[in-house]
Length: 102
Image (cartoon, rainbow, N blue to C red; front, top):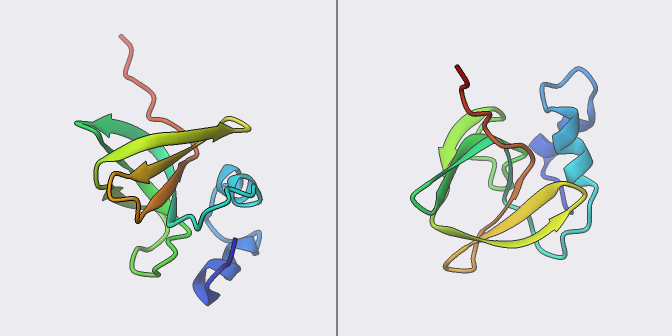
């Protein structure tokens, strides 16, 4: 995985990138990962989540995003790689949104 200048700072322990995101970033996904998603929830074939290590640099760590329509590609070490239906974007789901229980 290649880090941009912004992303390289995520290895600084004082940064706000969750440890699980850094762990997922060490896995060889065999594709370029566009972002790592935390607290992911599926909404009509899309994923909404907080994004970290956005490859484009357009999204700040922790911002909420909605992906294009995605399909599941592979699971590794408890993390899930999804790909946009266009095939152009790849995201790693680091954690899923916990449902509210009464």
